[in-house]
Image (cartoon, rainbow, N blue to C red):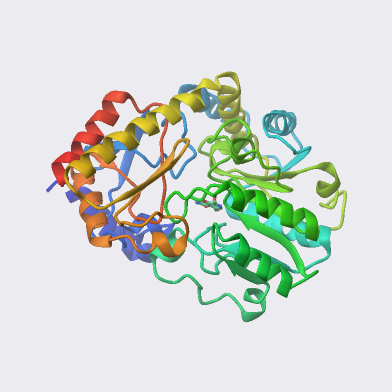
Length: 425
Ligand code: PMP
């Protein structure tokens, strides 16, 4: 009865919370079984209500890049909380975090803080529409930009895990302004742009995708998007909610060598507290209220607790950029170890990796877009997921998610993880 207490807590939760969870992927629907309930976490490890220990490869879906309850971040939260948690009045710390973020990320002059990645993407698109005076956007099948209406059109992550890529409740009017293209298919985007000439405000993309597993853009594709946007007066929006402050100080813009027009953040920038942000050069940001006409606001936006957690996190990363190399090396070690075992056992698979993002797909074709990601064998995935869980390794409970390594994970943890894979197949 390894999961007895978690299962009981899940039954109780289902009585009062839809599906027993406050975010769908947590329910383990794609892999079956009851979710584990977490009691506490420290460094690389999660501890569930049945006192099982897990090496955590999700890190709260990305934010905890330095591990759980990381001392400097933890202390920043505790110390700030003693002085009040929210005022709805400007504070010096908002500027401190803004200044640091702007200094780390290329190509941005100003940043506005919100409370989630969803809000960041939703507001960025409104800003892009206000700035360009155009209505339509292009998004890519399998990319997830939060649960705002315009984005729930063939979205990845939970939206596809649950088989409802186009959610009821999204109006036809909203859906018609979101045009869909395939990841890594530049020609498809060009065709859409031609057919909607002068009507497209923005192309929004996960510059390295993580919501259909990890998918890497080809050089031709991402460079081509940049050129096309510049030629056509379309803004290129990089959703760096996953990649920002994870792929390096400057995120995917820096890692890929591509300048975006608006960049959205979430996850790491809040150090594990609810923070999102969007940023751009001054010319674009000046369209935002109160300087400009595009409205956007938030009661708890920029609250001192969240800002101090974010400041502690970004300060650590800024002072120790070797963290990004360490993470990438660990991820490479994991990749090579898992690949060796799966090859040895003759298990058909593909592994995609970029920096500290990685995913294992049980299929034989390269995974380059949503269609190829969806071809993975879900039975093999379930066996893999549950086998690993039973061995104390916590992986994303859906093939449409990337792992996020945290730097508290040791090489011994990785070796244990690779051995766990060996014991399953
Ligand atoms: N964009 C991307 C790329 C994401 O991965 C996510 C969440 N996983 C979001 C936006 C939405 O962020 P949030 O869940 O904080 O609203």
